[in-house]
Image 1 (spheres, rainbow, N blue to C red):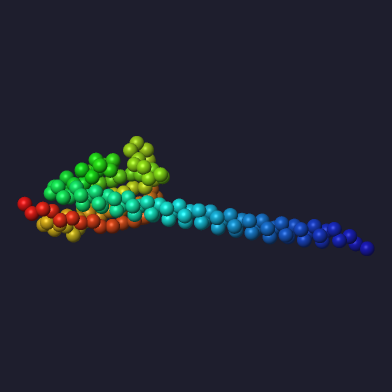
Image 2: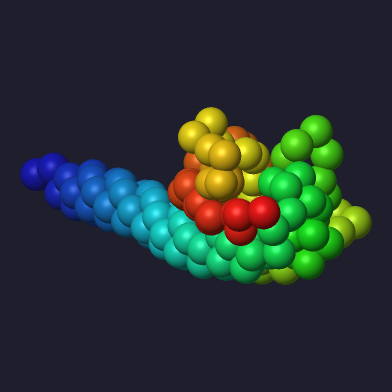
Length: 146
């Protein structure tokens, strides 16, 4: 009469393998959902920062200055830099302005192509460090006749 111990051990080894595979699958799903959640939160904050920048730009635009003057004033207000006709503001992972350290997110504002004689317009983009676009919008304001 043969012992049934090897058969029982093999059955338990198969069960451990099945549970290990299920655990790996669950772990992958949790990591994926965490990244999706982080990306969603980053996109929400990108919308808020872009809309805030647009409102500040429109408010500064009431002064009647040129697009360059408006963007320089906004750069000072937001803690960013203005060079080559482009406003750039870097943000850390907690969305605080990154003055001395490497930014995780970048907000950039450039003049839009549809500006007119009395209409100024800019294009606002918020991107991740990797270059992935999180949010973009166009903002325009009317200059005073003068």
